[in-house]
Image 1 (tube, rainbow, N blue to C red):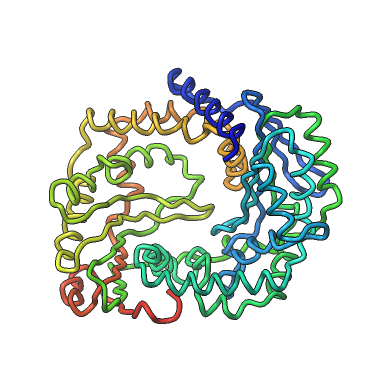
Image 2: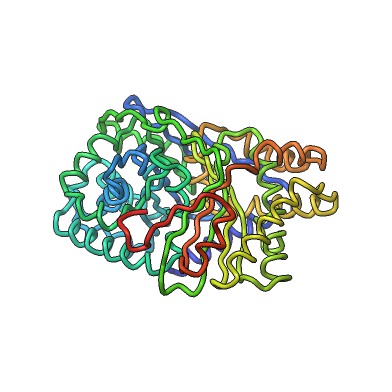
Length: 461
């Protein structure tokens, strides 16, 4: 990392510490507008350091893969494979020479391009950005190299259960719903994706309509507005229909167990959970605080009981994954094969504590302070702020959520926690996913629900 960027980051972190000292965080002022082609733009001036961060989101996530799992991810990668004016090597050399941080990718619901650079290099960066988004050439040689490398990574990942157990759980929970899609695909689906598939996916889903760009840092808003308008005014395109609202979530009416056999495993990776809440849920904040107590920090109930007291694992936790239309709740851990049932039983016992015993005022206060203490550092850099603005765009919330976050934490009472737990933490029809040596745990884990078995070497998830 170049010395100038390092100093800039130190100064930004120092600024964030002042926010912590003040005990509050308010989203800085920003300007939002929409170009005639439909592109939404957020501009936020931050003059503490001479840095600019840029985050762009596009409606091209893996929910649009159909049965070509991995297509969205490959397309996002391929944006960097060369453009009308730049080869892949030229893009990388230009950005790395000036010390810029950059990347492209696709998650479940959207594709993303991120850039962070020193202010003086803006004339180098913006033309590259414009062509990456609007004029990618999808070089065939680079595509084949990336595809081959991805297939190797996907093959190797099944040798490391901790890397794939979440994918198995998501697929088991959401079934045929778009939220169950394995984002990077499987080695079989990726092998079938062609360069023409990537080009078609780009044409259908990379559009100014449904996309947003956020620029945060050391610039003058009026100047940046002119620059963004000039860059993207000629960009055209229409977005295909979003498949998620049209899909129905599966309905699970009983506990089920997916047992993924790995004959040479000496440990069992397990996930327990069900559906959670969407990102727009009005009780987002209290759910976060309560989950902190259960499994959201190192001193959580799950870590204390499974790791510290019982010595069954080195790690245990819980969390909510939140999407536009739904989400998931998961308890996660791993243990030695022989301790599988003991560890799962204890995890369930700890989880039951949420429903059977009131959270003490002292513990609630500790969790609230923890959540508030973690909150400002999430936005300590211009890159984090740019990501926050595009998240606001994707999930349909505004600065009210940000500015009232800490007050909503403070408002949570012991009585309110009981209501939140009953409403949002799933207790029935739990879904269990285990990866381990099936021959040694098959009979024992059948008590948790109806067992479905797979081999880890089987196609897909």
